Image 1 (cartoon, rainbow, N blue to C red):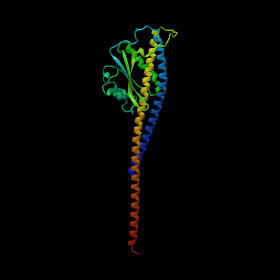
Image 2: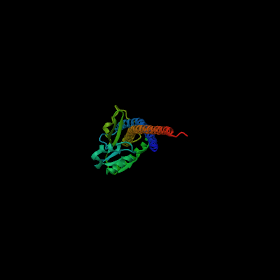
Image 3: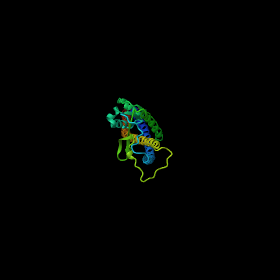
Image 4: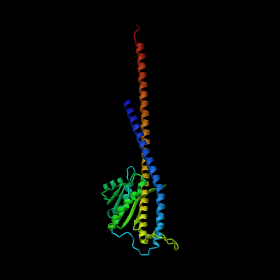
Length: 289
């Protein structure tokens, strides 16, 4: 019984150590999600500024100006999946949301864990990249995605681009969003009222192309930050569930430990009482010298 009690003590120590790891992972995920949400405010403000500039540049270009993206029969998808594990069905939901388009689209897949799940499903991505471990690295990721996109656009391989990513909202949880990125819908950029033409050092068409590239970069950063925050929110939920399970298991082990210790104490008391009884009985039957 003593050996069994020692084994349970070791198991309790192991469960407590696991709980400490789970708490640490949950704290890290919370900090990363909060940081990404803070950066989203800056990215959205930047995108709004670029959108206003595009609207002003469009006012200087005659209607019917050809778009910057060459038409193609093959669409492309940028899929933001999970980079690490312990995020539940995060990647599966993104892949399921795309459905049949996976077979007909050029895939740009972000996330090491998501790439592994896609491979298990027989889904081949033409371009893959890891998600940065910290959100300040996301602008560089957006640069790499844009470079890969422009290389394929230049050769006419793709002409349409959608981003598919998870978005977390307080009180509503996580949902998968699909956002059209290219070609840009110029009707979404309002023209400035009146005749307030800006002073330019570039041709309006060249300026518009530069602004469109900046706007695409901002949209890629926005989608990546949403995905980054949502993955860490999913990890927080998974760690919260794991913590609840650890607490239940720890409570069961501690109850078992108390029961076995009580049984051990009871057995010792019975043994001592039996020894005392035997000693007294022996003393009564001893002959008088």
